[in-house]
Length: 168
Image 1 (cartoon, helix red, strand yellow):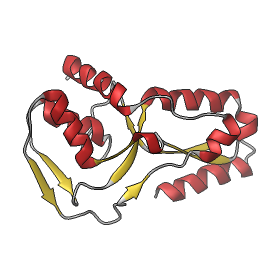
Image 2 (cartoon, rainbow, N blue to C red; image 1 turned 180 degrees about the vertical axis):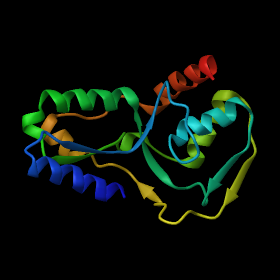
Image 3 (tube, rainbow, N blue to C red; image 1 turned 120 degrees about the horizontal axis):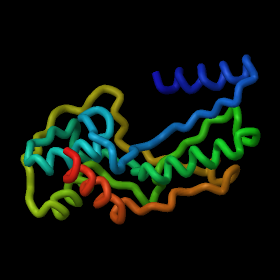
Image 4 (cartoon, rainbow, N blue to C red; image 1 turned 135 degrees about the horizontal axis):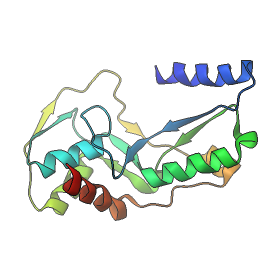
């Protein structure tokens, strides 16, 4: 469905001469994110720790993702808007890149260290279509807009957790 939406957006922009762009975003995290099991999983994991609730991992937990801090994503949006004539009609992969790549179990360990306690982790079978490894290469946006993620996951996970502590 995401691939179809990408194509519709780009084709619609081409047909009607609109300034469209597609960002194929990786795993976004940051303040103001509540997170649920299927969307915003980093915030969801943190929320489960915060409230000392159990967590279900689908698969073995070794699924790898690159994590993108929300401010890096906003910077990319603003850069694309400023350069819309240059980027219109294109799709860009955008994620935290290889330096912000973690497995689900690694994120759980980071949260365990941060909170200072464990929560119950249950494992269930993998979900259909779940990828074992997804890391955005980010080469196209780096080449065209000279944009790369600036934020390190370990430096900014605290901002999200602190927001959750103060607002949930």
